[in-house]
Image 1 (cartoon, helix red, strand yellow):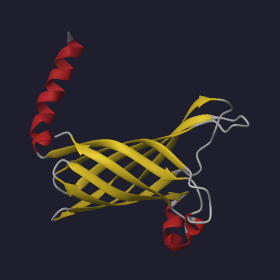
Image 2 (cartoon, rainbow, N blue to C red):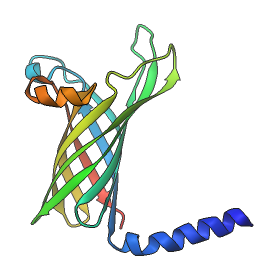
Image 3 (cartoon, one colour):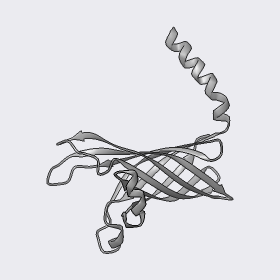
Image 4 (cartoon, one colour):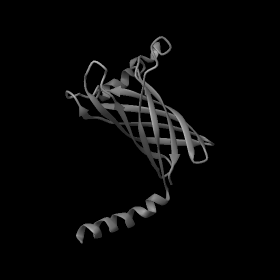
Length: 167
């Protein structure tokens, strides 16, 4: 009974915030190669899901989960979760976002895998057409705050998103 009451109180306390919130869910695809040699390598994309919660018109929290399958020669399969929190700005039908957050690796099969970085910085640009949003995203792997000083030398993971506004 206490758990049900707690869930009810939390839901009621969040209802005014959700009046000013926007939830988007959709698909994400990330290019797995070196961006500087994008047209010289085979086109290899990792697919996944992305969710974003925007509230108070400028704050945004996002989670991108990418599924990496095991290579043909054997190896691990895993989900890489890229979380971020930051700012989002709407200008007419365009949305620009900047966020930073931790990386997580969830092993699915095979030997254990460690994350390529401790955190990520996300830059995104979307075109909003009604409830549908299509955009480009770039995740910059970051080991520490000091990596942000040499931001121009970091190679990003680039990809695209297609999302649907839930509310």
